[in-house]
Length: 214
Image (cartoon, rainbow, N blue to C red; front, top):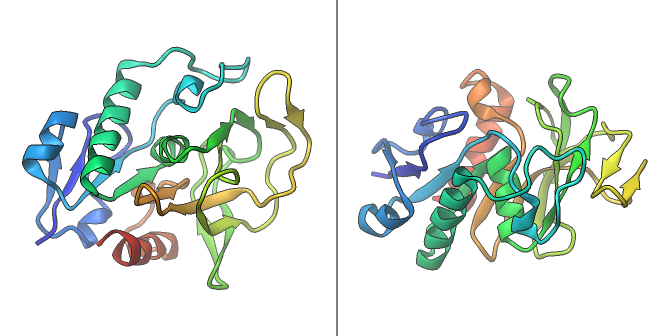
């Protein structure tokens, strides 16, 4: 029997992870992680995280600067989970938060990723359609990570790391799913909770959860 914990707020609750976590879901606070001891923690999608979490200031494209209540709560919950060796699933905003907590950073603005579904390539040779409703992007390339999936072709024409560092191309793939081994974090940029439970992307995510999380 496996239990999934989550911090209240964001784009999801249990599905589609109820395909893996058969004991249900628990709402947890940072303190309650120690008491409830879930098998995994999920951090859901939502508004931008504050760039201060990854040591930068917000630029003109960023809808956050100082840490919000949600930022503080989710950072504390993740830190408590990391300290106890509890693996974490991050979805969209949650994926970006995991990237930051692993020592990476974000591209503060990209275009082309908030215009509907698009194709991703996986490290095992598949092409899958993912949901895509974000304007920021994980940048895991400065920290230990495994790139599991990436945009099949570049979607963005602009990569704004901050107001002074703006590029029209990058030398790395646009990351879509990343495993951060040092924090046991599975970062999923797309939204499996927005898609049909049996679609290929959702089932791919469930494969990864079974492989890396449980």
